[in-house]
Amino acid sequence: MRLTLYGRSYCHLCEDMERALARLQHELRFTFEVIDVDLDPVLEERYGPLVPVLAGPDGREICHYFLDLEALADRVAVK
Image (cartoon, rainbow, N blue to C red; front, side):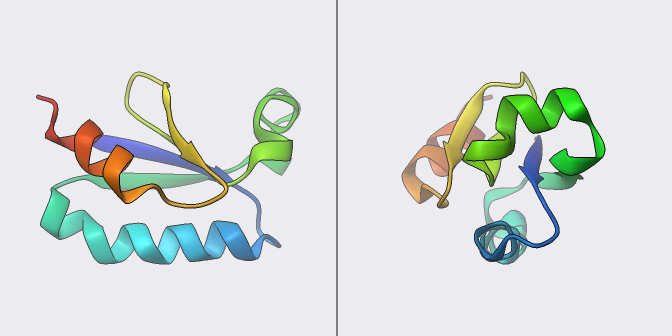
């Protein structure tokens, strides 16, 4: 499963979530890409106040601000 982390370069919460995801991706069998919302006005408007935002492949939000391990595990367990 491929997840998307929406964030920005100067956001410590974004960095924290990215590090946590990197530690978990092999165990929970997912990959993720990081997208800087400041590079796209539409994404900045949609996610800017909520970053970091973790979304599933369908675009649905899994969590924002802090990594919700339970929500992540539930989401990646769905086949």
